[in-house]
Image (tube, rainbow, N blue to C red; front, side, top):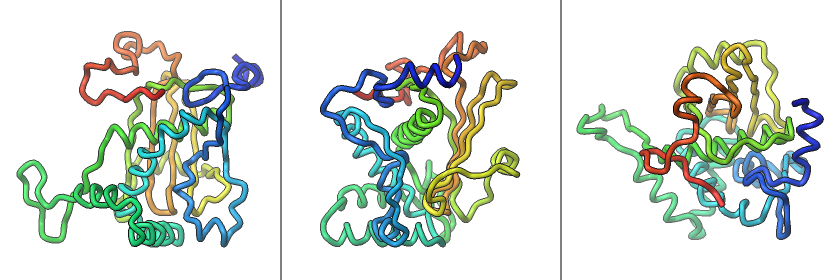
Length: 250
């Protein structure tokens, strides 16, 4: 189906649930507004952030997971203007009693012992809630995909993702993908992205994000209409009874 037809077909739909928009609605920032520290929004007049109208209930359902996503990645972000500003904003909220429980939860995810293995004194492991991180990455992909194509991707879908902190070398496949490719995004010092669909590889979708000019995130998934052996036999949707099931949203 052509891009124009897909856009026409999906006018008036909430990209989060795929259903027709009915009041009450609100605007959803893609990526989340939490990515953009207030001091930078004022300094650089970030008045043109991408927003998409969605159901208010769908929007609110993501608030806690987006806050977790930001706070679980912030400790590994460093060395850039936007990362430093995000740290300052988080610390100011903590001082006023906001997000104290969440920040304490994230700090408890740091481990010196992992599966019985004691790490060197100068090393620490950062655990994450893989399902919540997966879901927020998928939400961002769905929002940007809807923005570019007008197509609503499924609520439940499985993708493979990587997160590379600034002190580690990014994966070779990211280097190959990024070479010579122009990044997108209105305010790339906070959030930049690129994407491509590979028809020759079962219509594989590949996305790359640069968050706070510091953290590299990649995401890859099969097209919803993929007919490869894996998708036909198992399908990207995970059964509710399986460990690691992606949680369905309202």
